[in-house]
Length: 312
Length: 317
Image (cartoon, rainbow over all chains, first blue to last red; front, side):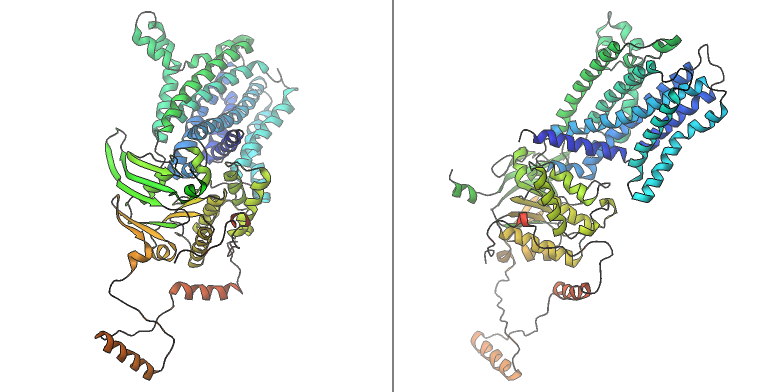
């Protein structure tokens, strides 16, 4: 009997992940992010002192920006829409605790964000390869087609096997990105740039915290206000050092919002990569610990909110 | 508490139950239930009737712990509905069949089966049997988002039966079904009740409720206005009906004269008609001999073997 909640958690997380991935808008956001990430080195006219810096920073910004939409929209889809559509009531009429149901939705969202971030990591690597090979026109023409090739493969699989297009497309775009990155990694200038991966991982942590906030908000709010509040939290958290941090020693009113808001600066380390620099994994672990603690605190509030929510 | 005492205790008890929905600012918005009192006994089919907004679905969601009462008391198997353990003994079919649109019928049932304490073999066996029982074996690989409403209701019913529930709560179980499907669902409900399961159902289809419910409660604006045995509530007072086979005109005149002499009133005479449902089902049954349903849905099989436990006794007269 003690294994039942764990089995439920796995089943519910799996379905939450699948439901979010099968939303066409999630695929659209993921593909747009990867295409823009791969294309943007071609749009850079002046490198600002370091080849690949501007495209790299843009790639990380794309991961964060589109990830915000994936996290907030996915959280709403998986919780508030399930409550509105009634699938939540069917599940909660089974011996499933509300805490288990709520936490499984978060775990499902974490899985979605990890898959999305994997695509983003690979697209960032392609972005850097293009940045260093701007004179290879054949490569420039072919690389942006990688996600498109994934979509075409998904269409063929959908036609021949009748598997759902969106789910297959998610997997096939990821596989195409991985194959292209793998094939080019050893022949290109700089190869696979492992030093950038920690920056992508840190943004993934930020997205997981955002997902925790979004899923907590969606226990009470609908999609539009959830996305608006998440965007506000993202902006305020990015500038919280400037807005509140400098007043923490002088005023209590600066300390409280500074403590409550997530400090995204911990996850935004583009400057650390400048000039061939890297981000130590110990820092990534520390930031991961901060993300876990912050998400746990937010989820605890969400659990309490959902426990007393009427599931209509 | 002895076992016999426990089995005769009501399955559902609601006492002075109130539910008020509030708006975002916690101000009262709708008083959905206003002091509902009722009990449901083991093995009975209990019908909740009422117009839209009467409080039927609210009462059902309170039974399931999906909503919390504003005041009053509600117990199910002598436990609070919010107690997760009580739900191991309950099956629930929501009003609108709410399924994950991108899963196939088999994936849907397998998913719901994993939420119960069943081993993998039992889960597989039950899913197989239920798919056969609801007649969707030929459509099991299609995603349920492509199903018709009737097929969706069948899957919804199957998920409600996965745990072989002692209490089955059905919100509009026959809505969206064709007459043959409605008949099957009604037969299934009666078969389950004969085997000792308790059924609480709400429906707008009064004929269905009249057909199968042992007791009914009629709600209006959150209050119970009538509660009792269906037959007692529907019995026409001061009327008597005598039915007998075809007789000659002369015999009829003799009988009518005798009744008039004895009672002093002139009786009405008419010929009974077959209910349209029976006539329709006869026509469809003969049509099914030669046609195949293009949707992949078939008429369904017998009660799933895992549900076929308990003594099959006739309902109380």
